[in-house]
Length: 502
Image (cartoon, rainbow, N blue to C red):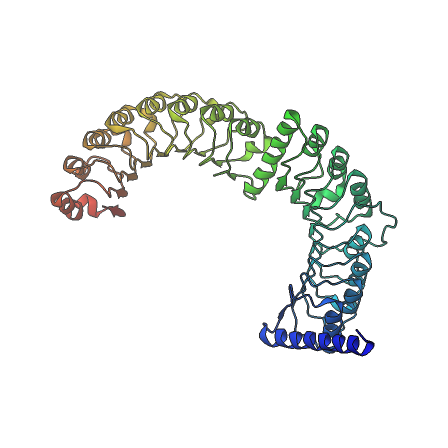
């Protein structure tokens, strides 16, 4: 090609880029300019930065555009980017000079989110951004899949880390033990709450740096998965006094054995309980956390349980042995409400609870859908410990009338105010036994929906001298006939109830 032809070709390319930029600005949302995958190159970015007023932009996406440091320098000097809060530069060819230019950009003072994933930025460029005094609003920095850690840090940037920067993603780089020690020495992690170091080359030494650094005290979410951390590093993390705010820890796919696994299991449980514990320390909700027997053993040894009054363990993976470990703990004496719903603990858990002197203060017990049958109810009825229950839930278990007759004879339930028995195979005989028992004279709430209650049961409930304190009755989804329904609507006792559902 002749010189003239080359110039004409470049002019056509420039005009095409201008046309593209105008169309994107006109078509796009006023505050969001999406140029991702347009491959405008440095020429297009320079044109954008020099010829347009970009003060209206809040978000700019330049993903995969063949951008290099030259284009980023021009963008950093664009004076009209004062309102930009999100800048996406993923999958380009940006190196340290480009990152330094961004760190020194005076017009990016409103920038909150900077994405530089899949570029060629090293430690120097990343640290310049973290310590930048110009990017004072920056909260989130994504440096995933760059070349961090490939070379030793030759120069530590001066100054302190940006106190507003809370999320730092360094995933899939080349950061090893020595590099991480250098990063920690610079104070880069001082204010970080969410730190992702997964898929690097971190070993035990790096884990110790994190564990021993006071700067780790702000971290509440830590990713260390897919590294080379062994038992020694795992133990250091588990025993760290600097990770007091940690709530989420990801350490799968490392090199630790059973020793490290046990230590990290305890640490993970500690972080989980911090997240699930009420501010006053009295309510602990661990529903659906897949806790197994070994986690229950670890939980039983935690001293903070001494303050817990309500413990909910619904839908986990432990059996009666996990509950036994908990019941034997000296830290559970103040628990008043225990929820074991949706755990396959069976009759054996009733035997455990019946003999648990440390749980003798229970006033509320939820055993719904726990596969308990009448022998389990018999264990509860004979217990010398569980005599203060005010609320008992035995719903969704195959109890039958025999279990009701056992309940009716036991003085253990004389303080009971609320009894839930929905879908428990209860028929008229079982209900009549309950209504005729003087042990249930203080019962205020009875829920027996989805059972086999018919006319005789309804008649028994209507007797004015039986269950005299009753205020709430739920008898839905039972085989009731028209006469039963008439009695429920017209009988004086049923009319006096605060709530009646049939």
